[in-house]
Image 1 (cartoon, rainbow, N blue to C red):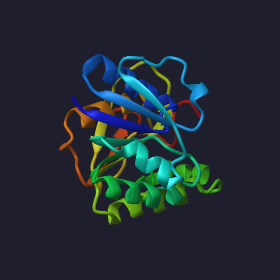
Image 2 (cartoon, rainbow, N blue to C red):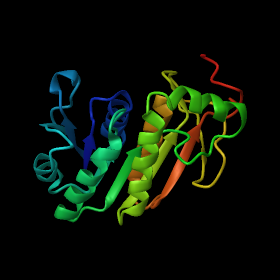
Image 3 (cartoon, helix red, strand yellow):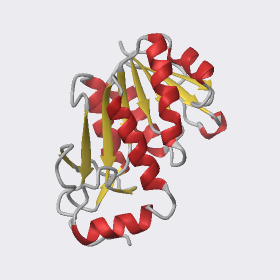
Length: 214
């Protein structure tokens, strides 16, 4: 039985992943959140809520003790500032495995007109530069990380995705949150899968200049 802590556990993808983990594994989940009232459907037997702030290293370190794996579903703001606290806290408790949700474009891997559109959408808010810096900081660490780069997200009730590697061009324009959650669960089920790399996720056959819902 593994013990998994989810940072930013109230997020949509995080809740989808947690529900799938409850259904398909025997993992015990720690839900690390700032606002516990957002969690309305917690499994009392398998999920434990811990209230805290990732930027408070003391709180984070205490929550990481006894865990086997960290799944971080944080953002959208200041994720680059969170990474040093996460790395330090993981070092303090001897924890190595990190699954990190990022975004497409952090490695300038999105080609063509869609790549230009993606930059126009994400750069003005500062979201893409922040996520890029966070990804670089994770890669520079000694953690056993997997950085996930989902395409533009939909709420479609489907698991339909393909993957691209760290140095591959991104494919497609969109992917469902349910698909991202499924990939997270597969990493947790096999902690040695895709270690120290980054994976892009997209729904097949969705190539275009921008996502279909724009």
